[in-house]
Length: 507
Ligand code: NAD
Image (cartoon, rainbow, N blue to C red; front, side):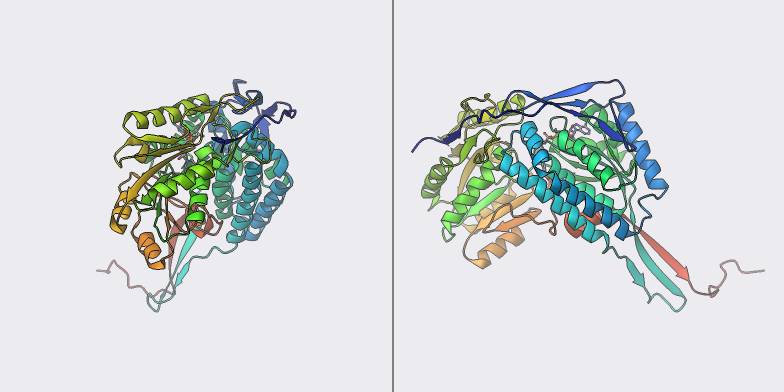
């Protein structure tokens, strides 16, 4: 069998270069200094977008617009059914634009077009679910505190929320946050990654068409500094929700602490999947291959740390190698492609350096390793790579590679497998493959992770909470728990009649 399955360049015409501007207080604007960021397609090597390169002034203007919009109640005091109606219209408008949005997402990220379409269509469903939740918000009433007391606990929108997103699933991750913040009644400032601004910029026009009042959402394009840093330090911001690297997440947490802003963080992962001999090994191998190569491994949920029972390790790795060879790598614009390009040359170099360091530390490269040349396209691709003979303390077994690289560790007992899983700085997700439900449940209870998959991988639903423990983050997104993050809790205590004895006793 060939070492891998390659899809050459389609040779199709690419669309005209897209121009993106900020959307602040309902107006499309250029950067205050007219600066621009250029994005070159990772797979095709051509310019695909020019975007406003935001300044601190632009970011501050966006925060001020969001503050005004929050404080005058144009959104926060609307009836929930009216907010829900806007969110539903946005969902429909996203649905109408799936192809246009997916195309630019593919060109900016390098991901396969079929997966970009799935991401945008799935994001529309997140907006629908947030709309449904908007109408279910309830507080508490306490009627047993004494004959003359009635108390209620109210949920109120937290205020102005800064939303900062990464490049790997630009529109999906935005939609894990923004519609839920809006459902709660918050106003927002949004910054996409400088590498993938277009779908977020496109959303501005859809929000306007859906009838969102001006200033409720403000989109500022540009870099972490100065745009992201202004969004996290500005005194008018009440909460920051960030998805990205653990390093930047920690930085944001430190700066937010100065003003005690609420912070929600979705950060990195190094997610283990444990394979027991009694598992359906065909399904397990397929899911491991999917979990490793989906989005070229540039996925916080990549299941790239495989922990296989020693009795089946050799056979299982052979299955993984054979299956990997059938995965189609190549031109993201071909609907048959399953794995596309790596986001930037710098990130490609980091992936390669991790693999080379593993080899130098004594690990064996069972498949791949090294850059990949796709016929007719650039060199920003990485070979599907399987690394074996890995020791648990090697960097390749502990650090997030964020590329199409699988590491294999082995175990002999359940306790050993669990301890290998938990001997990690991260705790985003974890998986187990076994046909014994008791083994699966014991694992689900014992493993330190925000999501546990048993006999499946990366199955997600808008109804379920998503987030990590340990260095993978704090707070939860999506579903009811995701909505709850955007509330402040207020207790209201009401005395009925003038029954309280005066504190000051007349002399
Ligand atoms: P990154 O941290 O470099 O950038 C993320 C965002 O933060 C970008 O918009 C960037 O411009 C901005 N930023 C950078 N410096 C900033 C600063 N000082 N202040 C404010 N904002 C700043 O991450 P990335 O390279 O875009 O994404 C990859 C990382 O994201 C990986 O570590 C991955 O695991 C993580 N990620 C996590 C999840 C999750 O849900 N847990 C999902 C996707 C990606």
